[in-house]
Length: 150
Image (cartoon, rainbow, N blue to C red):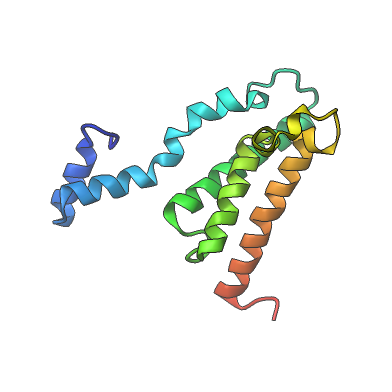
């Protein structure tokens, strides 16, 4: 309802908040970018279509890593996870979102995909790196917000 070119909900929200409609529309679109990438997840990550995926355990892992990828991407677009992101946390969350939503993206960008089957062509390794990156940001923000781990 707030996607371009109409952005009807932004006009209603701007009237209620007494703010500028264009600024409200742009901010609303930034918040909804996670919804805009949802259809592309199925194109670039065919594991979500459960093609050649065997076992409920793998299905659960694929679902959970894609959900974590969406959370990481939403944290990037909103600049907030558990607390306000620092610039390097946003960059790390962006990388984590890419790895969780499309695990072989770095292999394809760096040309490692053309190598023989090995560690750099395994989707599960990249998913693990993405989860570790997101977990590191979450742990740092947890500490910053609640002062735990001191």
